[in-house]
Each structure stands twice: as structure tokens, then as C-alpha cells.
Length: 140
Length: 59
Image (cartoon, rainbow over all chains, first blue to last red; front, side, top):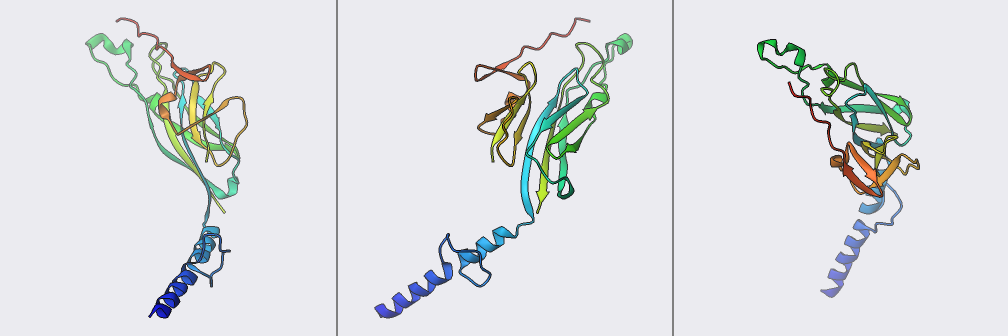
């Protein structure tokens, strides 16, 4: 009876293998997992959040170098507070001037992202910053 | 993967980034996490200080 159990445990050990097993499609479970890790289509993912200041229309940030031919930059959204137009308060109304809300981003170089917008807000003391989230996925 | 806060010439943080590798630049401060709460704060002697906003003019 003990012999059967030992044989069974030995079989299971061979099937599971060790974390240090070399990548191999015909090897243990760990060897197969190591092989699959090696063939992931994704090389790296970088992500972050940046702010264009209230008086600025662009901002450039630094990232780890990527192959621009094998990378995609994703815009994950942006937020900005409203900017009241004091010049339009003659009928006691205020509204959000939205020009400063609209921003875009691009992979300016292999190691930089540029975010830009056309407007900063209504004017001095009513300009608003905008905050943008992004991610860069580089493929193998 | 490391995290960095990027600061401008006035030491104000304008970006937090999780990079693919280490970056050695004077304007990139290594931080513990992707902490967005430090955006627009000033880096002073290893700490992040809130910069007071200018009050809006009265109408």
C-alpha cells in the first residue's frame, strides 16, 4: 500500500515540477507555465496621470523608452473644473466654458508623451488645470 | 515596476507614472505608489506640500 502512495506522489511531483524548471512545452506544469510567460504578446505596460497647469496648454512627461512601432497609447479620460465666464453675468447666469476640458495626448517620442489643449479657461484667476490618465502598452 | 513623480522647475508635481524600468533624471522623484494626491503639490525637502490656490476675485 505504501508503495502505491509513494509512486502516486512521485508521479504528481513529476507532473507539477519546480518553479525553476526551464521553459518546455513537453515538460512539467511549471515548465509549461514558464514557456507561456515567455510568449506573452505584451512586453510592458506603463501608466500614469498628468496635470496640465491652469496657465498651460501643454505638458510633456517622461516614460521608459518603448518601440514606437510596437506600442499603443491609450487615453483613459480627463477631468477639469468648470470655468465661469464673468463677462456673461449680465443676466445673472454663469456657465462652464468647456474649451479647457478638451485635451489630447500623443506619443511624442519613444520616451515621452505630450498632452495638449487649445485653451486654459476664461482668463486670469479663472483658468483651470486639467488632469489626464493614460497607459502605454508595448508589444513584443 | 517603479513609480515616479515628475516635477517642474518650481518643484511642483505635474505627473505620477508607473514606468517599465528605472529612470534617472533630476525631475523624476521615486515614490511608493501611483499616488495622484500629490499632483500640483510642491516637493520640499523630501515631502509634498500643498500650494495654496489664489482666491477668485469678487464679482
